[in-house]
Amino acid sequence: MTVNVKFATVANSIAALSVSGVHMYDTDQIPTNANMVVPCMFPKPNGYISNITPTIETYGTAGSEKITLEYDLTYTYCHAAIAENLNFGAYAGFITKIASILVTLLTNDAIAGAVDIRVSSVSDFGVALDPAGNAYHGCDITLHVQEFCEVS
Image (tube, rainbow, N blue to C red; front, side, top):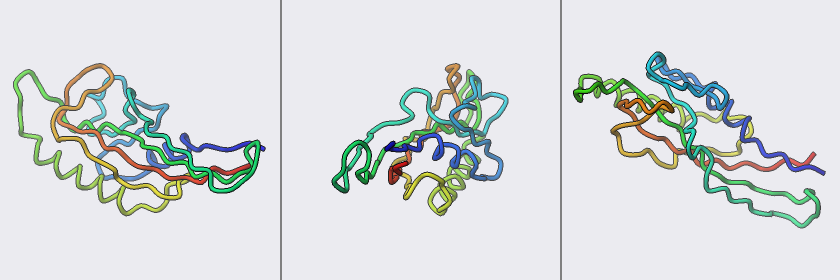
C-alpha cells in the first residue's frame, strides 16, 4: 500500500485558477524575474510548504490507515515594480487585484487534490520580492489546505 500526498496536484489546480489580469504560476513555472509578467502570483520559493500536520484517522499498517493531511502553501503576489523612487501610482490597482484574487480563492471549490482550502493569511501589503530580489508592490498569501491521503 502507498499513501499519496498531492502537493503537486493542489499547486497545479491553484495555478489553473483564472483571475483577470493576473498570471498564475505553478511550482515548475516560478519566474526568476517577475518584471515582464507582473501582475503575477507564484509559489514562494523560500517557504512554500509549511506547517505539515498529518492526522491518523483509522487503525492500519503500512499505509492502509486513513490519514488527513493539513499544510500551508504560501504564494507571493507581485503587482508592479517599485522603482528607485517609491511610487504609489499603482497602489489602487494593487488593492483591486488582491481583492479579485481573494474572491477567487474564497469561492472556488474546484481545487483538485484538496478536500478543503482556505485563505489563512495575507501578509502586510508592502514590498514583495521576486526570486531575483527585485522589489514590487505586493504581499504573500498563505493558503491552508486539508487533503485526505489516498491509499493505492
